[in-house]
Amino acid sequence: MSHLLILVPFCCVIILNLPIRKVMRSLAPVAAIVLSLLQVVMVLCFDCHFWQTQFGIIGTFFKFNLVVDRLAILMLLCIGIVSFVTAVIARVLIKERKERFDFASLLLISLSALNGIVMVRDIFSLYVFLEIAAVISFILIAFKANLLAYEGAFKYIIFSAIASIFLLCGTSLLLITSGSTDFSLINASLTAQAFSPSIILAVGLFLVGLFIKAGVVPFHWWLPDAYSEAPSPVSVYLAGIVTKAVGVYALIRVAVSVFGMHKSICTVFLLLGAVTIVVGAVAAITQTDFKRMLSYSSISQVGYIILALGSASPLGIAAACFHLFNHAIFKSLLFVNAAAVELQTGTRDMDKVSGLSQRMPITGLTSVLGSLSCAGIPPLAGFWSKLLIVIALLSTGHFVYAVVAVLASVVTLGYFLVMQRKVFFGKISEEFSNIKEAGLGIVVPEIILAAITVGIGIFFPVILNRFILPLGG
Amino acid sequence: MSASAVYLFWIFGIFIVMLFSIGLYCILATFNLIRALIGVEILIKAVTLLIIVAGFLSGHTALTQSLVITMIVIEAVVMTIAVGIVLGIHKQNKSLDVRKIRSLKG
Image (tube, rainbow over all chains, first blue to last red; front, side, top):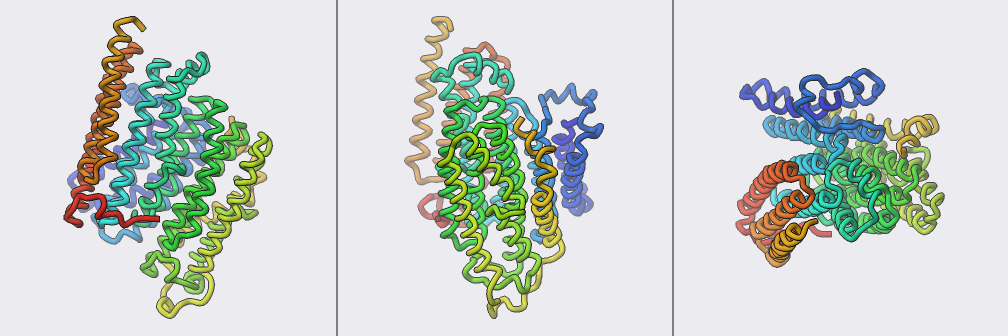
């Protein structure tokens, strides 16, 4: 029945856009919240009847080859949580009713596209869903309709189009060499024949396409502009899940089940991962814009995921997936904090605000939790995934990369502490002495996300053997 | 691959490489937003041709036909959004020159 995860949001958008405007306009934001919450509930009881049932008559019309495994379940959970948070804070942050309706419709289409990316087992279907998610992101980034937002969106369009061109070149070369677009058939034919120049070219082109979509360092130029100029709910959604599912998840899936973790691919992953971690962290130190700093931090964390993937051991792959999940949670949390600060003070410049913790205690506390988790401080969730990454690197003999990972973690702690000191600690300035805590619609998602981060950190010994280690396969 | 297939592949190959270089040159050399989009479009055309050749060489012509139709639809959607954003830029900036909208840096 996993088809329903794609079909229901899609049909919902069609129904919402029927010409009975008045009812539908108030219904759309609620529909987005309900559907994403439903997805979280469905995923949390993944032993239930829903996932095993075959799809009857409608299944004959939708011949997608959908497979739901442990990694896909994890990603579906992530998508559900982040979409729920986005839909909830959008009700507060987007003021006009028409815009709220548009946002909810776009969010639902994007939800169904992301669910598709997670479950498909076919290169071309993957491309189609990637492109749907990308088109929705273009519109969402340009949602504010000012010049800066247009500039960020245009950069993303050019980079994304070039990424699609790389992906399609790779697809067509794989089609020539293996005669199919199905994951398992391509994998079988790649392992059967030795690595010829055309296969290396095909794999290289495909990986470059996914690197651009994921924002890995030599291809990261679009990412800070797009994240920081998008409206706040969109930043949460893009940083939390869209680039992670579109770029990083697709990279993990393709590297593991199509290209089979060849040794040269792993070397590329290790090298690019280390460079991404360092460049992202160093660039984040110098930023003064809150959201821009978080974008560079996001680039740096993607580096950790790629680095863990490069160790090519089952533990490394499990650590990459676990860090992907943790990153989605704590980076959404930090972007929600940034949204709260921007909403209450009207600025994103970290030099202009100070001492907000006194007036916004919950935002201050949750942002401390989020940034400590991102920097890898025990017992929060981020610490455990970084520990697993370092152990995976050490056990496969990559000592230099392990040292880079640990040192960059210190830099991460550094820039987050600077951010905390500037924005939340210290004496409150005259200008902001009478601001209040953001409304319930922002505080509740903050508390939920912080609770997930702390909960996973504390109950890590329980979930390690049951959920995390089996992810490596 | 038979001899005629190799021959055909070279003919198509020359055109694909030509389209690729024209598209890349178009993107890299211009400062105009619309021209950059035209460059992207030419690159996509090159890829479309490559997929058709791939289908011919691997004997999956029916599969590649459906792929190419899907691709054309997606490409049209992407270009519609892109041109919409270029229109928005022109409305606010009264110019299509990339050098005048470089405000996001660092």
